[in-house]
Image (cartoon, each protein chain N blue to C red):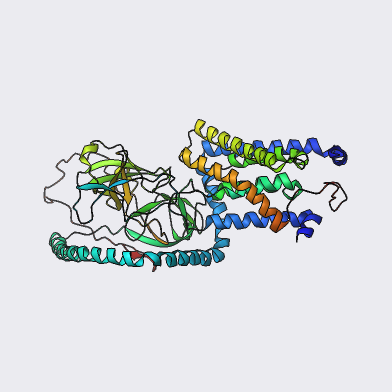
Length: 210
Length: 312
């Protein structure tokens, strides 16, 4: 499978598209209908059996326990890792299609996130040849920097246009875990799917150097 | 070395850059259009969701079922303490049940005496939750009923007990429910027994805060929160939840609906409440005063169509 992915860009593209489809599917599963909350709160609730009005400060035992963690934005992580490693597997058209589709499906303001991700992936694509010789830590830093930059830009534009947004702490939490999961995504992509940096002198099916 | 590769693509480069720039502009344009004329783009969004998500349903239902099964299995660990809790609760509930039965009989008797007709307009359609918003920042679920079933934007949605949210975005076979916890959800409510009117404003936590209360001191934790008919958006008196106070003294609502398990939701058909617009015509003597008193009641024919609709 790894050899096939190296030889034909279409196979690599299909792998990327399939991976994104699986991620979208997993995120749409109706399992997390309780919003995550990063801070544990103590609530003033009525004691069981008491009438309305006489409350005591206690931890609410019957309460729903929200998750104290956020999922990383795996679609973004996979996209930037793929673009920096194998730009030929992630054409810009596919990036636009995927991001616009997730904008629409995940109830984000349509278009803005897609545009920012497209700009980021194009910058990474232009640098991907140079990134091949970078130490992994530097590569990781530059990817993280790009993700932080577009997230802040996204947030800033939404605030300027007065779109209602989630708490900043939650966004920061997701940003952090997304950046932390980048090396893991790169490692798994390399081990399982054979998506690594092209070796020096490697050629594609038409004989062009990668 | 890196240059070598680009030799053959020199003429492609500028065009490609132009196309990318164009794509970015188009996407930003779409975003601005959404910001200016949101309903049109939201209709487009509903159409896209309607086209995409039902295709995944065949796989989603079993995977969701399996995940819930695993979660159930995990909860067996707490079964002993849960059992003790339930027994205690059952004791209290028995007492309440007696009271409720007596009240029900009394209520039925009084309704009968007064010849009251309960609102026949509150019928409902039940839908299955297909998908959620897929993002930790938005709180909504997708139902498998849509315009085909006569769902309209703005209708309230409940689970068996409490209000869950309202319909926003209807496709042909799907409808999106914005949950009360979403940042864009605002619902007019009344806090009982003090009768304070307020707005329940979602903020992406499971305990949405209550805003715009006139006298916050009149509200105590444990008070019941029900929807109010203010603004004609929602039917009145749907149970929302119970007031709780967080560590900062902010009054929030513990929702009555079970947000951890949203499986089947009821969409209430809420029709526009009739409004009294004019102050009433002048009453003047017309002809011989033989008809004194209210006019004779006209026979009303209620046409309730559809076999799948039950009375709520």
